[in-house]
Length: 265
Image (cartoon, rainbow, N blue to C red; front, top):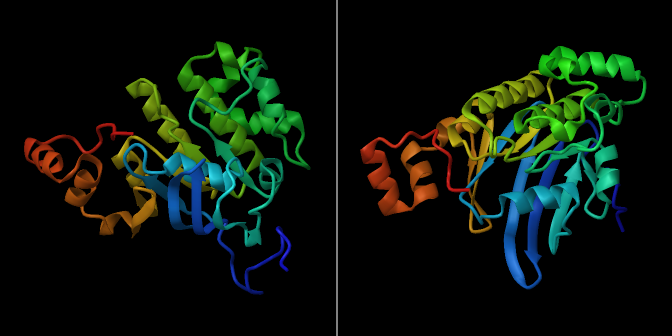
């Protein structure tokens, strides 16, 4: 029998940083995911999109180890981590930034960053790396994280991921509740993560913003994958219909509803 963390990628092959195979999951007796398949390759940005209640956050929770699947396999860097704890998955290179920020509100900004220092890098060097990429944090190092604005807290969550340079970061609605200016800043920060060759799996309400930085798009529909491929292959009318329904979607397209408006999620 294969052990939970045994290598399952053929020798010589480049393993995806994250792969979900045949994942089914439920809350109690209510099924949410049905035979989900999803792959994130090294340096790739994948946008996981769909209306509210389609299973996007559940997919991230299964990937991160916060919810055990009923069926299927989760692999990180080619290793089966399906039965691994969230802590061990984090050690394997997976980082989750949940909706509502992924920080320690009762610690200072500097203390939040120090907790993410990888082996071989000093706390001072890690802080310098974070401040260089996220200058706004340089003025907040001694401030309690919970006292900062929502946008600054989200910046700190992204900076924590940037410092530890994980194999893949899972982002769950990081723009939720932010002002338009802070949304711009947060997406600039996401682009910096991608530019640093950190793989990203993004669940995001601003559909076109996510698609603009994505290499691949995965659409969920009632817990199943209805589309998987490059953004250029996803018809805009189909995307609007997917979010709003065929009748409402057609009316929205005719009325010129901006595709970058927050999706129903």
